[in-house]
Length: 252
Ligand code: SAH
Image (cartoon, rainbow, N blue to C red; front, side, top):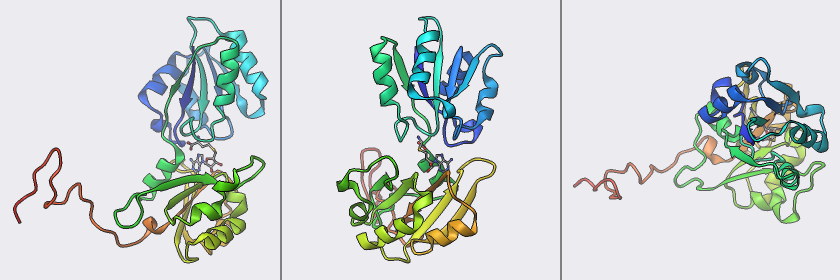
């Protein structure tokens, strides 16, 4: 079986228990070396074969699985964060299907959750935003025109941008054109949960300048929205006057 495992955002103890148990038993691990913390591999067996996918093509990755596969072996494909977000797992699954190699996915803590944690932030504040938009600026991978940042910005929801740190001037321009005020709070989180993590709180207008001042050019998330600093309403869930499935409202 091939296991696509989410490694989490970086800190070694933010992989799931299931993911770590499989890593311990793995016969082969192909890890995304550009973003997965190599410390995670320390728990593997001495005889485990380890490949770094950073320098491999899709065919080379699949070749390893085809060569190594047998029903009693554990083959691991270790992806950063959660594999379902910009993980390029579907193309691997398609080829594994072709070779009739079974696979399974073990989810992970995505970096957008890691970033919120280190900021003590909540994306879904009552009266501020009840929606999180995860997206990216177009790079070499095209983004469908209907998902242009300008269009997404019109919702003024809480927003997280992956793979965008090298395009911050353009990003700010699009966010403001789309509808956010230029002084809307923003944060740049570099290597969330890694020992070398950096947190920069700024505004949409100052994104580029703030990243430059802090020498951040990659491996960062850009968070945007009023959820980062503002007054908000209290939740209904813990409101004393609110009845729900598990609790009756208290007499006021
Ligand atoms: N599957 C991953 C995302 C992979 S795309 C996840 O769920 O997090 C790679 C991009 O994710 C990077 O360019 C960066 O924008 C972001 N990223 C991944 N790990 C990060 C971390 N620890 N801190 C900040 N950004 C991170």
